[in-house]
Image (cartoon, rainbow, N blue to C red; front, side, top):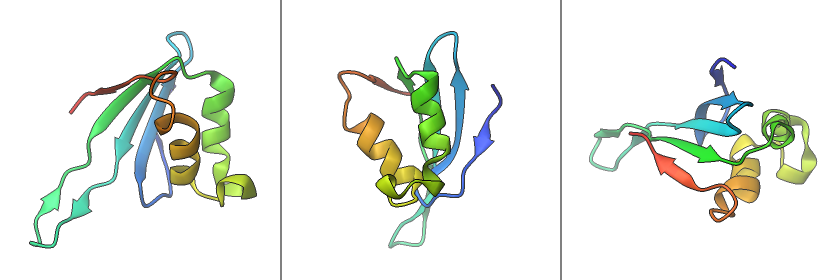
Length: 90
């Protein structure tokens, strides 16, 4: 699948490979107190099902995740590193 840009303060974009069950996530850049910009990291997460990926994409309309891609991502994926091991790509 192609990279999908998200309207989120935490996540810039996602890409999903259903054959490998791999989610690739681009995090937003951050402006530091010094005024410098910290470029957002890129991570991949394995064992992510297509259903879980679709929940993440649809989270902006889901009150359970407070209509937030970031809160959904944190609750369903980040909070479970044993199920969805992260790997920093950059």
